[in-house]
Every structure is written in C-alpha cells, then in structure tokens.
Image (cartoon, rainbow, N blue to C red; front, side):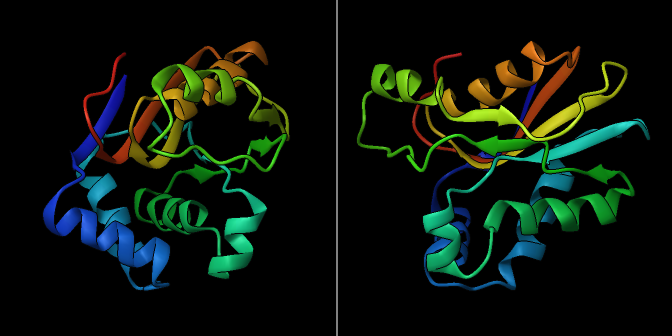
Length: 163
C-alpha cells in the first residue's frame, strides 16, 4: 500500500522546497501533519522508517529533513520511529534521470541498520514520489531482511509514477 497526501504542486511544492532548500525547519511540523492526514489509523506495533538522506544533503541543510518529519509523526501517532535503513552510497536520485536510470541506481542504495521484526508493520516515509524507485528499493531491502508487512507513505507525488 502506498499513501500520498497530495500532488507536488502549488503550496505543497512550495512548503516542501522551502523546507528542503531554504531551511525553513518549522515546515517539518506541517509536513508531518500532511502525512498524518493521509494515513489511516495504525496498529500500535507499526514502525515508521524514514528514507535515509545522503550525508552531503544533511551537511548542507544542517538536518535530516525526512527523519525530522518522521519523529514528529511518530510522536503525534504514538508509534515507534526507527532509522532501520542506511545508505550504502552517497548517490541521490534526481528528477531529470529516466525511470530506468533511477531504478538501476536505487537497487544499490540501502542496507539494514538494525534488527527487522517480521511481526511488525513497517511504513517507509519519504517526501516526494517520482518514479517510486527509492521507496520501492527501500521496501525490497526490508523484505529481503525479513519484514512481512511493508507499506509506503509520501507527502507528494511528482509526475506520473509507474507502480
């Protein structure tokens, strides 16, 4: 299952861009509210997992934008937030790359950074869904390491994703 709050247009796109590129950190609360609105009621054994941000972007921003959103969401929902995925490289997806290029790159992105409990429900959180390569690679990594229930939630959809 994939949940999405909105298309990446208008005010939603502006809020995301201001948060990511202009360091408007106060937007994290609003973006977590968007996700909260998009998600159904979740069982208490749910764990939300942020897509790991590459270290270069964390240094540039001064914070991990997705982790900050997921922490706020986990507090609001009273569910666990874990950084269970780790980047294997410092490559970032870019919207100008083709879907095939993005899928090929994403296969090398993630490794597990903790213990996966097959009885937990995992929801991967990301800000923008373009082709789905990143979140689908993250989901596959979790499944290969024992997760049985993996879902995805994003704030905004960019373009026309192929699922």
